[in-house]
Length: 355
Image 1 (cartoon, one colour):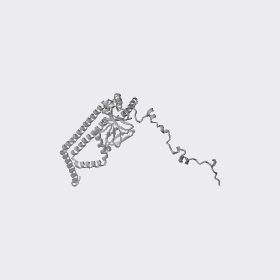
Image 2 (tube, helix red, strand yellow):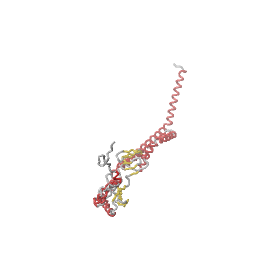
Image 3 (cartoon, rainbow, N blue to C red):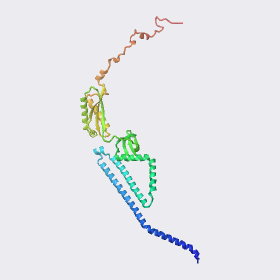
Image 4 (cartoon, rainbow, N blue to C red):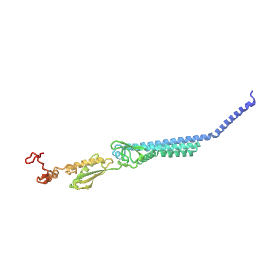
């Protein structure tokens, strides 16, 4: 039988364990209600955050789908060709939707995380301070990326240009084939593809918005009657405006603006017309073609063409084939005598030089 001295430490250990269990049970009993309330609040915050995020994302997706359906409804029509580009609208709406969904998710989930940390009794001041310092460091390190992103967002929101537009971005020019939040992709006139960072675009000249101007300069002889010129050009313009596809590409009447330049041998008549954006060059080429044919039929000569037979005969100078008079034409002149060859020693009457 163990002695009482041996059993004393074992009894003390048992009492300490029992006291610890009792204290833990008391602590749990006193705080379980607070823990349960905290857990329920955290679950409630997360459920509300994810539900709100899901609702907002679905609403944005439906809005984007509706915008795309509206663009597809007019695709292929005259209105769709002039005012609405389905691919442009689709890319623009997708980019805006992506930005809005990302911003909504960041704000909602970020707020939920901060609320959960606050429920867990975590001091948020050091965390927010560290996040601020890290944000400043990242902002300085990736300022070009941030600049490109923000520039792309504002370009898309303001609809400065879109797919299918022909723009002059300063560093490059061409037709827009893709618009991104960081990079704009252009196809140049020779087929090359330019990748232009949105932050590097300081100015944008959109050549596809509004309307364009087609201008044709016609040089004729100054002896032509101006009234006859205006009449022929007007006939050409009226006939062109009634034919397809020029009736859609011409957005205004073809006007004879008047004389742009008058010289001794020629005068320049300026013709102008308002056209569909991007179609001014095709209209200019067609106008030149038709005006040349009409002038040939009316007998109006354009400067730079082949001259008529009468003009060629009149222009011939009869004296051009006659040599200019000179001292060499008179055999008795000193110059002619000086150039007379010296006769050889075999010629009669000439002394022979011997040693």
